[in-house]
Length: 283
Image 1 (tube, rainbow, N blue to C red):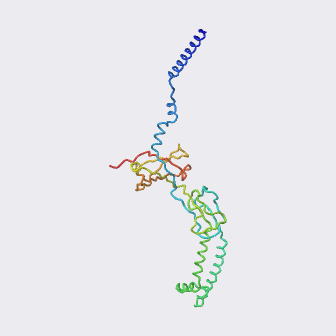
Image 2 (cartoon, rainbow, N blue to C red):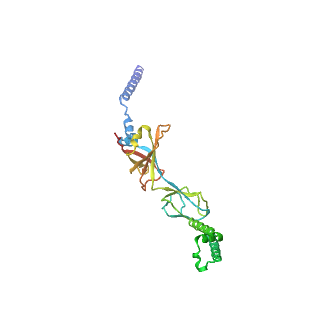
Image 3 (cartoon, rainbow, N blue to C red):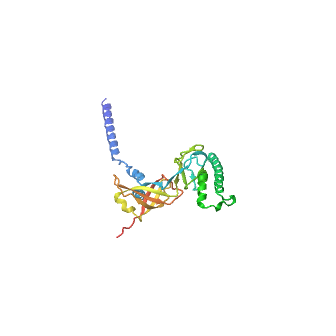
């Protein structure tokens, strides 16, 4: 009986010693830190830090957004653009208006002009001038004869109608992309209401804001480089065109720089502007 008790006590003591030894071994193993690995994975390179710290975010805009108007009220019978973003060239026919009503008016005006011309000749012949020599009449007499016959009035009306006939063909005033289409085929064109707008793609600028103390870096003579989100590896030169002389509530000033046209540049693009060369101040 005593032997069994001694064996149990010995087993309990051995178990306690083994447990203490295992705990001590766990504490002695150093914990591996993954901070370095995480930092190296998320930390940007020095070049990236420098690039983002010096670049200023801006927006590419057009210098001109040209509305295309109709000068007369007629139905649209031909419309060259259907979707926004379509490109048109300067002088390209973009719309035609119905000319049926105008041609009828012109025909009636020409008939009245012939009648007025007959009356004009009759007045001169009534004053003794021969039909085959009406030009021999003095200018003041011929002028009065035209007024009395209504010739001048009808002639002026005919000239206006013929001019309006040319308004039925509408051409693009500039080259660019079509935006904000306001009308459609067989719609009613009205004077003063634009059919659509053309974004001038040949004259672009980049607009951005700078801090008040950074203005000297962007004065005349500064050389700028512009990149876009769409084509980050491409850089386009820009020339300062103006700095708004008013500081806003956040201590910022508005700066604009002109860009040369490029197939990869479009109004509305997000741009990043960096200063390649700071202008030297005059002594």
